[in-house]
Image (cartoon, rainbow, N blue to C red; front, side):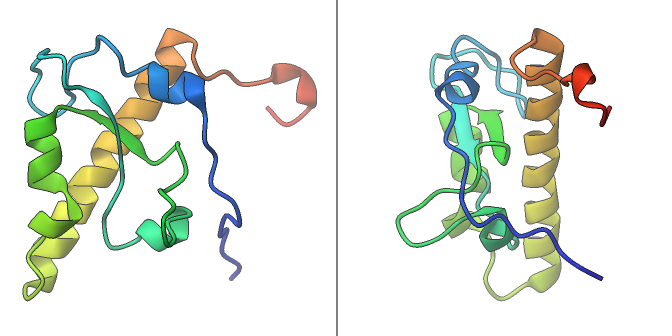
Length: 117
């Protein structure tokens, strides 16, 4: 079985800017601190994370500063694998919801003329 492992992270100004003025997907607050927070879970290296480099911009979640602090890498319990896995899955869930939001807003689109869609 082959794995897709991105060699290069995508950095997209339009994906990042699309977080402005949105509500936090985790708590619903609209406090001006919402931005695209890059996934920092157990699989972050599979999404392009490296030294001094954030994950691919598809692995971002629209979160407020408070929710980011809860889900940030340093907040994950190092000694409890089950909790780390649950925390990582929750972060991935918000990343997927963010992609769905971007698609519904027209920030992301499928090129139907490519023959792949």
